[in-house]
Length: 282
Image (tube, rainbow, N blue to C red; front, side, top):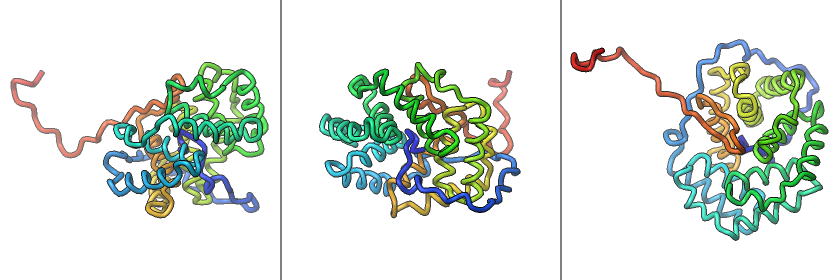
């Protein structure tokens, strides 16, 4: 997920034209559970690759820096201190943020969300006032029925930046059906970066409806293939695919008070349970 959110990398933004009908038959398989644990499935080389990409962006591309930093802090929360997110980094990302205020609210929302997640104690410095909310909400309405991927990502940004006003976004049944259709579209095209981004955002926005996303083995294998394809060649895309997988593999993921809260799945028990010693039996 460009999940933290969520603003997707440039490679995710371009979408195939809807010129021909696409088969989406993968829907009908039953969900068997996605298994992905960053602590187990990401290596030291993965950390070093993403961290190296982050440092390449420092002082050069603060927009991209914000996205990679948010991914790393989500995937490796115990190593956040190693990202050197100092005052200079905050100021650089905030300067990048201001370039998009009033000109591109989708991009503004994605960078603001990253900053809010990375510097939770400095959110008040981002200028998230009434006018900002109104302009972003208007941009959300503009995306409705025209660009559902951007709609979903803008909804994510608004939910994290203005959690107390989530009820004002008013998604109706038609909106949700269209967003699910968007997910089916990317599944049918086999565009797994788009699919993972859409699915992770939907699972965070509507955690009680995650079962409707049909996250079956075929979907997991497709996303895993997409992850492997970006390993070592596109660390930015890799970080977001990994985030999306981590969200989708959780027992439950949701936005609570402007933060992303993950409930990990309990490990599956294998084999026959061993009998308890007599003194432990109840």
